[in-house]
Length: 409
Image (cartoon, rainbow, N blue to C red; front, side, top):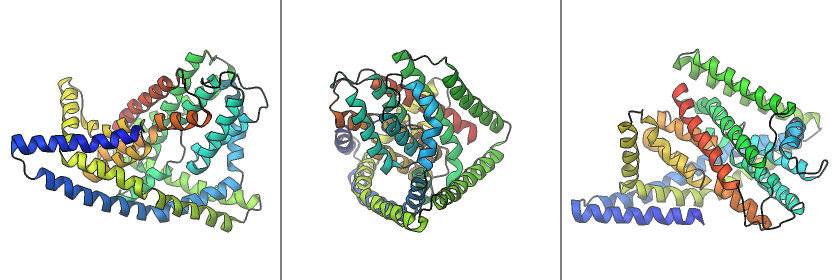
């Protein structure tokens, strides 16, 4: 519903601004430019989706091998000590714990198709423990904040889009995204724990969060010792080595489980083809809306207004061009994806704005969409502090993304 209002607003605002330009400024080019943008944006959306088919098929095939090879189960076991502390209201040994682990692990591995059904299953099991069926419980909110904070180890889709848009090194945003999404998740856990009065000062949580924080601090310190070119080289090399290691690791895990890795790959690759075809209408819709909005001059007015305000405060305004992606992300994943593609198309995939828009896209998840789908699936109407915690996690991710992008690029 939110995306519906946003999409309609794009066209109405664009039309109003175009009429004002025509009547008061004599700009007879604005309407032809808007119409040209509809055709150009539709073509761009289809070309992107078509180009995604092969790469999505490849990665979803690899992910299917990892799934059948027990990789998600390994992540579940690794996360078990910390998650039992973050969900104290869930009875020990309850089956929902496994569903939560599976969902979070699938999200971390970028298995969106697997994550959603696992998440819905977890919500159904959490609802069974809920004494007030129309009100969100503490475990529900913590679970959803972990989802909305967007913790992802492998941002495959973003890397694929960068490759499609002609980036010289599509993986150069891998480490920055990993850092930004860490800060978003950390902020979400802390804020939600404060609301729910979960004691973060226990050994398990302190060791886990403290260890992760030290590791991230060490990574940031290490990169700060390098110049920009060295940062780029090391970040890209580490990303490529990690991704290739994951591919080989998934295949080896599948072979150890005596999985027919070829058949598993084909099964996942079929899902990749179907996914690429399925996103065509969504990508066309959002890119056409954004294209019309931008062609009317509305996007430039907003960006210029924010830039003027930032500069009036004496701050650097290079990041402003990527803000549409950050502002759209909590509302709509497809909308933010369209904004990201539009930023790379307008400014260049290897520009500061193009890279920052990708980091924005990877640093958080679609807060309102996730809350609507997950709560709606179990009939919860009163979400308590879920929206506040989710948006604060988003804000932390946005701020971290800006600072990290300045550091790297």
